[in-house]
Length: 531
Ligand code: AR6
Image (cartoon, rainbow, N blue to C red):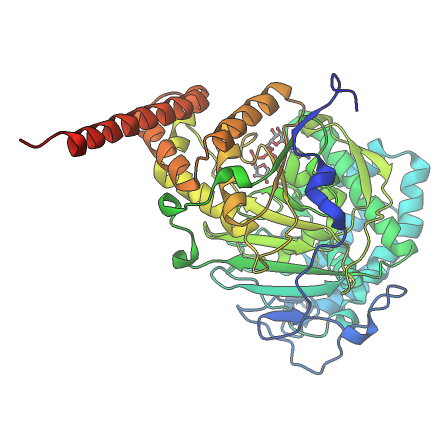
């Protein structure tokens, strides 16, 4: 690369990968246990056909610890008899009867969905999509060929998932590994809005039925993004229906107890030992083999099933398997993160936010690990949304962000961990300051022994400032503990965020000067002749 056009500074990506390259990192094994639930027969992973679902005669639970499946016999629905009296009928029967009818357009689909789900608004976005957005032939093709496939996939759920799916609740470290086919079936149910509404989880879980994206009225400027998100979803279903994907995906909730976080003021590691690659071009989702950060909402997926269309929503909509995490992942607490290994990418895109556009099929060529997962690891960490910019410099909140990054990046493996691929985490919709957030993420990388690959999203000035700061930290052998103390004194100074880097450099000089004086005084007092 010509140095004039070079978009990155720091260590080259090749060097960061080292001789192993991007695809040879150790991945956490899939081993069934009380805390690692596996939903298929492990011996049937052959990467030619979808692994066989785990068969069980386990009783399907309808309780507060498990996903309530739409086909559970306890899922009852009031229907009117001819004489006006009400009886409770198994809802799955109604779902089956309704969905096995011929459906020619979105109005008919809406009417049928209303027979088993009473919480639907009018599905205005869905109608707009099929009546205004798509060409008539495209819409006809959908109702003739794709929708019957989605329905078939949805109705196979009782065969595909026979084991209870535990909720990933706050405070419990637990993982679920499902086949991509099982996920497709669950997503087909979410698309058809068959998951029962439940009061106990309504606010503490993100929710997976496609209600808002189909039916909520948003600002007209959002319309374009919503339509293109629906294109991504349709493309996903089209693709998995033509050929069922053959891999598996692990969803792991990480939850670290308080005493396991570092004492940041006591960390003596030299920050300069962590290598960094900062690039003003490129995107996190294209960083092969690295730990890709999802700039998450505490309800994972954020507005993906609504009108949201920034980093997290885009990540989820181009890899819709991520969306199913919303079915079972309770809102993230401050000491928690969600890691997803193996999600496939289905769509390309252009634009961002309101200008987001589906840009066709993406052939995911990521190799599989030995357990049948694509070697793509995504970690959802939610920053704090700041109303007032100045709030973010209070030490309690900086600590919260530092620990959040730490729990996301931490691995029980200690050697040869993939670098973290991140960027302006918490600095868009959540209004944080990228100068501060880059330092906090850098400290978390150093503490978890990972290198840092940082994308500044087109901002070459930011790239250079972060790199200058890094060089300063490395040449002066500043430790994490020291940097943490500088950040705390910045917090007390009440200066504006723009002066953060200058402040740290000054603080370091002052400390050095102070040390030199103290040293001098010490020498002076020991060398002074006693009388
Ligand atoms: N790769 C690298 N950098 C990116 C990318 C990308 N693909 N996309 C965006 N950026 P934002 P937040 C940069 O606003 O502030 C969602 O609704 C770009 O500079 O998505 O943490 C979630 O669900 C952008 O301004 O993250 C949460 O509710 C910056 O990253 C909320 O947004 C921040 O992206 C989180 O907001």
